[in-house]
Amino acid sequence: MNDQIRQIAERLRGLRDVLELTADDIARDCDITADEYLLAETGDYDISVSMLQKIARNYGIALDALMFGEEPKMSTYFLTRAGKGTSIERTKAYKYQSLAAGFMNRNADPFIVTVEPNDNPIHYNSHSGQEFTLVLEGRMMISIDGKELVLNQGDSLYFNSKLPHGMKALDGKTVRFLSVIM
Image (cartoon, rainbow, N blue to C red; front, top):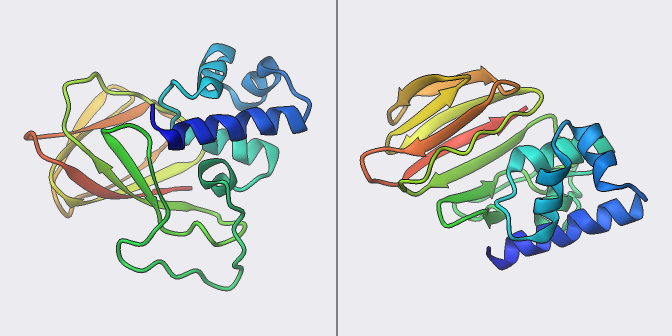
């Protein structure tokens, strides 16, 4: 895994230490398995944004603090110039660019997500809330609770993110989409 994932893993371990929690405590509180959480702490595991969001929401910290190591400071507005959002590359296949990293107490987390084509099986996530997806470039297949939908450029989808969901790029080409997690 890359250095960014290892830094997130260190922040997870640090949070757990500061809060004096066990991995089992976090797993129970955040509705994830202890094994999944412990793998995330190693830095050798593809840590999903949904897992980080569950942990951040449950313990009242900013998602940005876990993802980027920075606390948001703005409360009136936060401007993100084209191509300048704080980004993290979870794996070579997924890159997340935060569009509101500096805004405190957000009700939603908007990202530009870039997914490279690959033959790996779809990785499924689920988390509380809702999610909005708008395809900016390319085509993607998104599976929600077993239902597969193909989205083309300009298509959008709003869904209950408690349902298991995952996506993949189609046609052997990169897909970019706006994802707003609420």
